[in-house]
Length: 430
Image 1 (cartoon, rainbow, N blue to C red):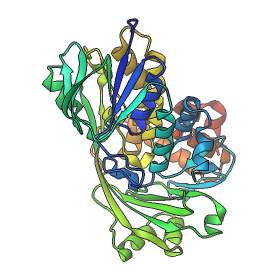
Image 2: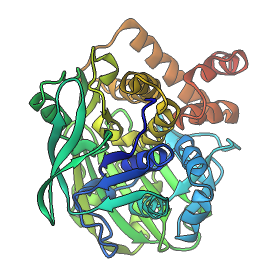
Image 3: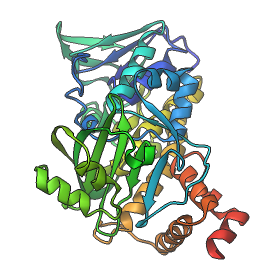
Image 4: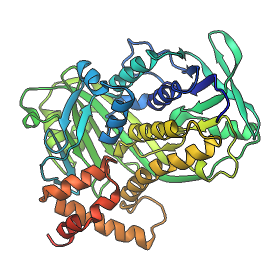
């Protein structure tokens, strides 16, 4: 895009939308963020993001990108009440039924509620020159055709109106209507990859007590063979944020006795110990996620100019793996690198596909290890499953393998790091 660019419009003021607006402000004179919610600072969780009631994890790769885009981001979040801890030193992880060996990883966990992280991002983004936010405004459709998108139709406090822009970015999240909008203008709809996981959450806050979890800031219990797992993290307000989860319809109950019993059924006792040893703050809140969806915009023959799709609108991951915010950051970084390209959509989708592919493969591989999840299991899939099971088993007692495994999971190192000669010897010949 070598022509002058005056106005960009971002649909959605969530994490992916704010990151996109931050990047676009470097190249556009004006950036408008359109958000359907009120964004009342008195509301803990806004209506358009019901998943914010539940535990969110920001992988270290995502935190690093946010720190680059917003210098001092981590420090500012901590000032607002977030907790910082080194992974496997200040936090504990259970994978494959046992705890990973403790040791230095070089990874930082920034632990907070989704609402706090989003608030910090929004505050920093709206300080930037040229960025404006329109709340209580809902996008109804695109203006343009299969060759170029030129604006959007919206309804809001001023009624129905048209907003023109040189570039539209759909960061509308899991509720995006992008496939309907593309169909309406005669544009190609991307193919989809889908995995039915039927995940159910139940989350509750508890008062933190000194000495719990030996002073560590979080515990994660990955889903076992029965599809059950959960986490407890120490968040702002000196609280435990506890989420328990189950796949394929085995969802945790929200009554007192059922919630406790489900927590007790996990493969490690730590979360149940927190639940029964802490004072609850409010009632358990349920949430359901049925299908992980990856829209293959990178395979489109001719994506319309003037439109980009990112975040959960492009790929909605199984939230068990805490990849969404980090992949949104990776996509924002890819967008930043592509903004000067003449063929922006094609260049961006190719770059974003690299970021999405690794996370999708890691998540899909974990899901397909559950025999109840329907999906194609190739010979490579089966061999990878055997290898990952071996990695996890060795990581229970080998800090080096545990470190490498989590650096891959945090999207800091590539999966190939697990097959580096020194690491592979530890895995195969412990």
